[in-house]
Image (cartoon, rainbow, N blue to C red; front, side):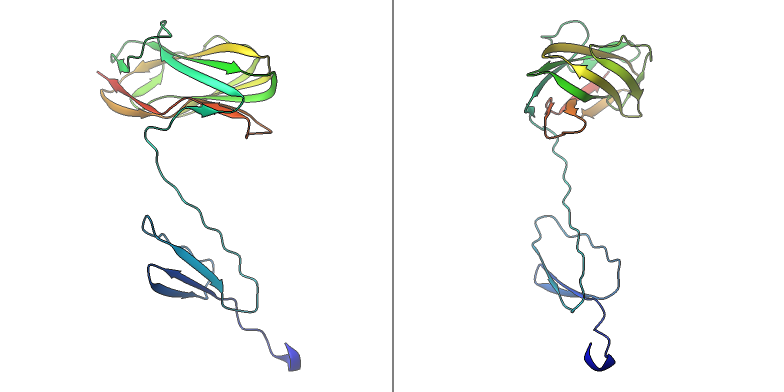
Length: 192
């Protein structure tokens, strides 16, 4: 400042739930209760950068999408809606991806429910598929070119541990333009 004065150190004033918090030691991290309102104000002459985010779990997420429509089923019958898997018997998770227009560099993710492991890692390649990664909780399928139409991908799993498990949505997206995507709804499965 003028006359050799140093500016005041950076400070941030936060208000949440009627409580006022002055922050002057950085980095600072706080977790607020659900539904809390947050007001932030820079309380110094120096810039202060603030990042805030919100997380939640939506157990019954609806199916949605822009350029891709997905349908997931277990076994051979694409109309079967059974979510009961017998423990110890291998089953194939199949996902049909309907592409509205030809797409390049598409990532298809097929989640594997808890209680299941991979039965085989030699699943047949689907249309346009150039690479497949078997991750801990999902299979990532990479397609370089995916023509318009409906394409089916499958993953063989082995239900092992009895229980009720959440099954995250399967999704497809353009890797370089992820606003073009589609997903199935979230659901649950029962291993018996």
